[in-house]
Length: 332
Image (cartoon, rainbow, N blue to C red; front, side):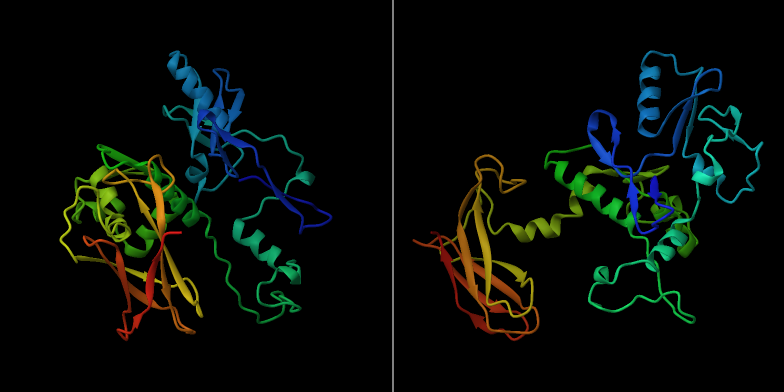
């Protein structure tokens, strides 16, 4: 990620918003640590642009004379950096590192934790959640605080969310998930076990394969990760036989304390396993309304729907005390 800060006002921080990953229209604050040089070892392109250019060259079988460096930042980690240090490209050819040509007075290099720590000392009081009017005096002697980088975990969460939305019930083969390198490094450091050894010694041996910063998971295994959740969403499936008076139940929890009602929207689809409620042929039938008492705690409720009779009926019961609450369908 490229982060720019003003020397006159360090609290003014901006990032590049225009990294675009080729035809996928992926706009990201980060660019991959990738650099492409021509046959004369002259700089050609960087980041997503370098990946796209190298891919086009490979299609024309003209890539072999170019120097393609990928993830070279991690290759430099832990090494003593000198002006004549050499780095291998993707084909094992060595090339001497080059200076970026930026004036020293215009560039300051800092580790992320250091930059975050310094910024904490400049946070305006109106941006401190729950501490209106207070001063975040982290620079005071004896002050202890923690700087937490959640970026990689958010990246992984977004990657999983994207894959979850694109996989289909009929999907087969393998699903590829990109995992931040730092998460892998943290796991191996804490467990003192490599990722490959962990997989081979688990029930997922042969079903999951680790390749660099990517995890390849068989589609049935990936779909099974969400099975318990998806099963709770469906009360009844298309084509399923239901006896008269048979009840189907689902467990739900209120979103906040002192919630007076729980509203559960009911949808119907001709598909046996619909993906989204806004897809074609999926319609809203109405909602189940559960009246709740005033409570400072969140309430867990089991809602039972009775099918097969002349009309649908519903019951609601609190799980810990087994107290029954009034519930009804609202189809208006």
